[in-house]
Length: 376
Ligand SMILES: *Cc1c(COP(=O)(O)O)cnc(C)c1O
Image (tube, rainbow, N blue to C red):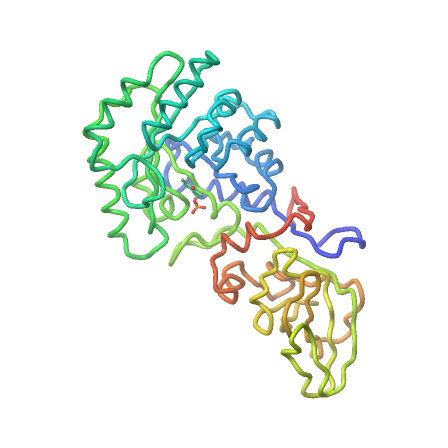
């Protein structure tokens, strides 16, 4: 729980936890399956540069990002491994992707045409992976028509343009019931069966975190874990990850209230008795969900205390009546562990009516990210 006393709120990230979670994915799918850690959205809010530095010693196949900008940022950091951009590019972005030697996901022939033009014009070796849509519906070639587009793809590939992989994305690997994932698996294999795939140096990948943990036999050549690496539960009944992210804020104001005192916009909470309240320096402007008002908790001195009233942009108020000796500057944990108490990302997400992914990626840039290399 270290920061210098002037920081009002921050995020701690345990590097060992991220590494341990990647190793767990490897244990699940086996040593021969390539791991492509997804570091999009600033490594799910933890900080892409530090995350890539933490994972580099484990020698992943490459890294996965969502945008060309994220890919070029990785190249600027000196990453030499393949960088897979997993979403379709806007039409104007292909040139920059080729310049940064990114591996582009292709979802249609128009995209492949643009990539081909850019690769030929710049005369730069350019790799692409082809996405097959097996039910996710947001990107990819239709699995039912592989016989048609397969030939056109082969005709365009060649010269500087190298077809290096094929993938699909599961929509329900987080759910207990495997039937939807099984269906997508067989659709994907139907599509692959009607394609004339390059034989060598070709990577087939399907699984996100939940897929890699629940359906390791669908690993094939590679897996693309994200959320689990960052210490979030990947789906129903799946193993707990090693904790990674802790969200903390300091007490910046304390008041003793009289019965009838109110707190926050709309005065939605009223003191029933003599109470003691602590304001902490964090709010929805930092990514603490406003929906936690009158619902969520913080932990102070190892004790769980309720959030009272609506959360403001910059401040949140806790009822600390039950906890003795709280002082200005004391640290409150909003996600993570303090003493015997802990608050998971999943608990916060459930209070806020959302998913752990949105809590992590919603942590705003105002919060310093503090990477802890040992213990923590
Ligand atoms: C984000 C993403 C992943 C990672 O998913 P998690 O559920 O975070 O493990 C994998 N593949 C694609 C295509 C993605 O967009």
